[in-house]
Image (cartoon, rainbow, N blue to C red; front, side, top):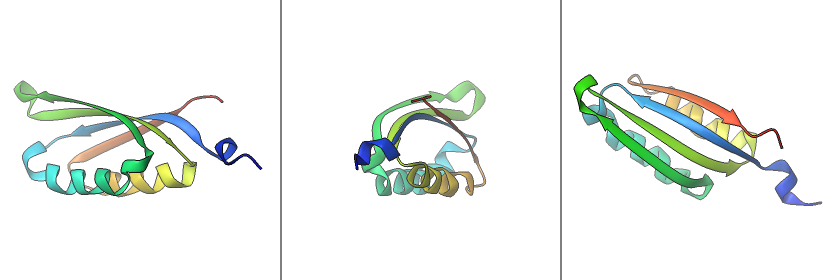
Length: 86
């Protein structure tokens, strides 16, 4: 069986409402799931006191769900995931 068939490509969007308070825990979680992350783009939006992060991920839905679940439990973080159709 081809293990890549169970894997999905997706984009995880993260909005951090209190960047200074959240970054340590956020980065610990992202480091833990580093093998899933193909790319990361971060944009500090200082005027609005928030940060926006986009992750390109490749993993099973369970792996990606575990990561986004941990991120979503953080008080100052909002997370959404979108998967490619194939």
